[in-house]
Length: 332
Image 1 (cartoon, rainbow, N blue to C red):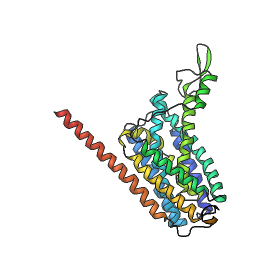
Image 2 (spheres, helix red, strand yellow):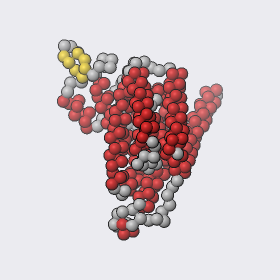
Image 3 (cartoon, rainbow, N blue to C red):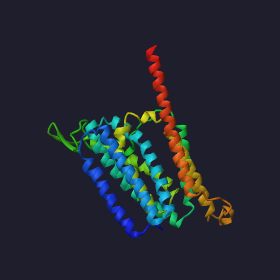
Image 4 (cartoon, rainbow, N blue to C red):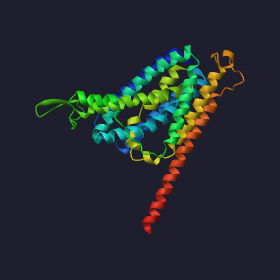
């Protein structure tokens, strides 16, 4: 149950819907490559809006929901940055023209929001009726964290899933783009353009992103309003972040390690909450384990800020060191 007043939630959702429409369907549909200045201003605007939104929640609902929002937003935003690696690979694999990539991202992010909305509703229904689902969420996040660490340093590759392979066999798809069009005429015949395949690749990849992000956010808050708004603010401005970080993503070397720490921490937190409210008969006879401590919300925020901050700082320092070493070798 949300601690935030209903009128505030209604106004917030209306304003966020307007933000989303303008960001993705108005600005995002103008095919062009945004400048660095445009990207920085756009990202800064939504970051400031998220900070103000958290402050407003603090004022109308108290410190706990506000800290939950900040924790959720930082986690989802960090996961979104990591997911940009895959977007870069998809764009490269399908040779999407640079001027069309912003449009593709706008559609992909819209799909991501819709999918996350569905997952949030399903997750809320599950945790309300079955507290043991926290065990599943917790162990899944621990597995994801381990996978991030074990795959670190390996070259990321995109492999077409079965749906796209079947699609290529059953419908005619040309190898040429025709602006934003999904259909085009070539030598008198009608074909689908590669844009259709790109949309499906982005959309199906977003499903996997949702599997990571939704259990993570439910480990920080059970409030559906906080969960949803955290995800919306994490997705707003993601297009500009893509172009701003496009050439720098490979320099964020330690970001996956920071994310792994965050996901592992949330996974353990979920398992502890599941034990604290245990109802499974084969664990302590179906009784709650009251001795299991509960991790306070402020501690979650502190761990997230430190993990992401230290990994980002370490990445920047290593990148600078490598630049200095390259420059020194060039002078010899």
